[in-house]
Image 1 (cartoon, rainbow, N blue to C red):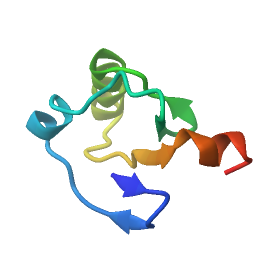
Image 2: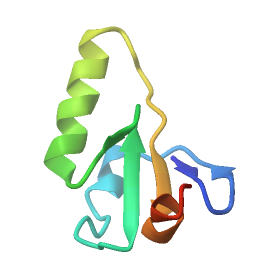
Image 3: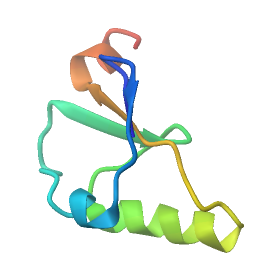
Image 4: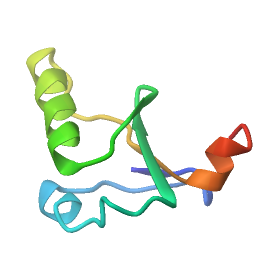
Length: 71
């Protein structure tokens, strides 16, 4: 996970992602430019990536105001 605001990167495991507050409208999460709005969407992307040989993905997390301002 890459925190766009602080530019810090860390590895997240699935059990941690399950605990995230996915309904927070102030946070946007993106993978390959696609917004991820819930755990099911994230899992769909991860399964597809795994099928194509990708073991890791870059998930960008950013405050929504940064994206609305042209992030």
